[in-house]
Length: 73
Image 1: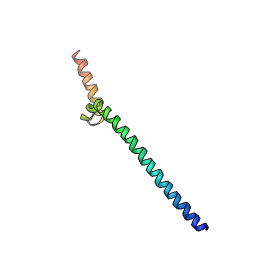
Image 2: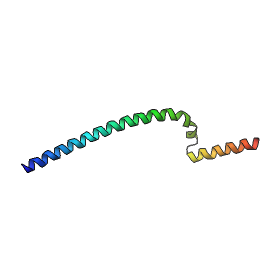
Image 3: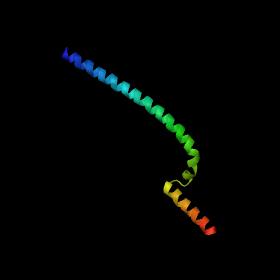
Image 4: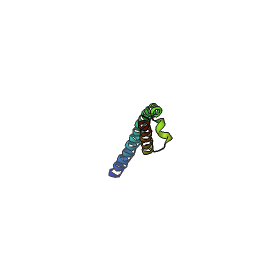
């Protein structure tokens, strides 16, 4: 009886694990969907940054542009 009980417990644990995984996947899918929606919104603003690749590059580029503007003034 004890052996079958432990097997039952193991089965239950496996089921619980699978269920947790399923729930986790569902949550992740929802969160990723939300994130994707947000990133799609944000991407329009951030697209300029992508042209120069690195964020630091973009920062350098920005400072360079600002310097040029200051020189012109």
